View 1 (cartoon, rainbow, N blue to C red):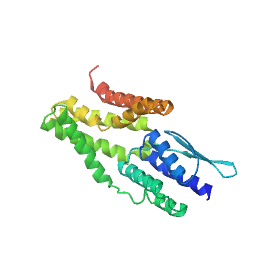
View 2 (view 1 turned 45 degrees about the horizontal axis):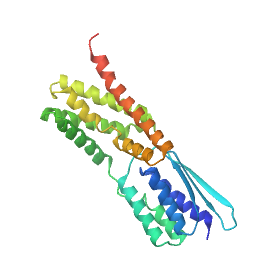
View 3 (view 1 turned 180 degrees about the vertical axis):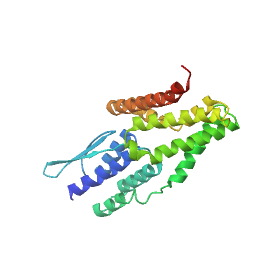
View 4 (view 1 turned 30 degrees about the horizontal axis):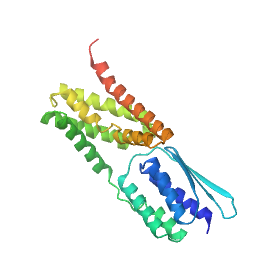
Length: 252
């Protein structure tokens, strides 16, 4: 067996699991089970920004591959496709070339939504949360407009902010709070608080916080603390961004 190809197979599947938003324990366990199904004795170590996979050749020579994991979001469909393929290969190990071809087609074959559909999702989410927190119909409509603006910033503003989550969240929060203030003063919205909180909910890193707590309880302290620090930075950016329009609009 070509252990280099086997190592590439496991590392690529693990990388796709991580970029889809999988938990650290899921990545390590999936790669370990996959390589073990092919008769290897792997060592897998993962943190949110790095994946290291190592196997030993029959003559005892260790080979290792390290993957740098860039900033990413969560793609549930890709995560499910990776899990399904991993289980299939563990049950029925295919030739390495066929298995690698299946891994390579995970991302191109997944369903992708157009930016306008995603923009509609941000709009609907902000409107729903505004109603959920007690806002009226006018607040719902105003929050929908704010959610659309925030979604546009997230989808089309990456060329200016790059992968910097802190500044992207800061700008989006300022846009949300500023638009809520303007819409209330224009008479479209009724309660600035309900409009603002409804819009900010699309920026709250709830899944990241849940994964952080789960990893800490599972013993992955480094990964848990890394995700917790990221969550705290995002929360700080939301607070600072929301405060900027309020400070400049208040009378001195």
